[in-house]
Image (cartoon, rainbow, N blue to C red; front, side, top):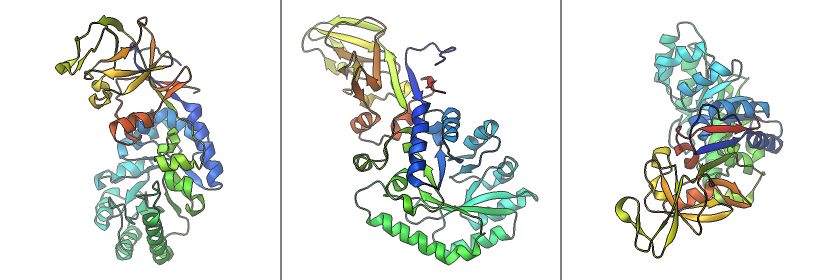
Length: 373
């Protein structure tokens, strides 16, 4: 890993072989269906260009993002790869998307009419989004669909795909999943004859793709599990495919000191030593996304777990040690250390959130280094 140009003692390592492994495992699982590599939000904090390249090398055929700016950055590096923007894009940018051969998501007749006036003869490819119960964006009825399809036919807007999104595919109770699936199939049955013959239908997120590969039509959107993370504890327990986590977070001890009984640590003096103790300081804090609620979370040093004590500061935090360590000792905040492991799921559980959120909130001030490019 080339670390030239960076001067921090806190860093992320992303294993691109793990990304490749996860794509290959998904491809084997879904057989002849396409894999859309979802690299929105800077590839969930992993690095959009590097992850996209690894995913494509492993057999992904399309890149999927949330906003047009992400797609434009990718297009600079991937000239001929299909790129889908899954979120809403203002119609004023339809011409820009068409010029860069970027596929947009549409679901509003008014949007198509506005975009058509700006395209000026250029053809824009779009995927229709169907809201079967997620409740965010999408066509909610067959009547809406007819209007949107007709508007596309009267313009230079070319429908090349259709998709929906499941709200509960990662949960043990599948009643709502089957309700959404039934709604989509019924919708598709009624409108299919009005759509082009050549059409990519993709309905599966990571959870649905892993649990119900035979239901996935033409392609799947491989998001959180592209990075080796399971969408929920339930899916992790079932483990439909074996995933390898790609993300590790490391730092170093920059100061080690002995404090005495009653001495306080950090803002607010919320932690006081109950006896003479060794305290280590680590150069990472909430300014990096290592937020204050991670107080009392554990890190790994020399294969042993040590708690974060006192309030986490913007740029530093402190850990309680059982012995003095040398300055420069490696600290593992997420990942493996001498046979011990602290996972993204561990951090998510401590924060009472989901594993998706952890790499996304770890900011760009932490450099990303890539193994197995």
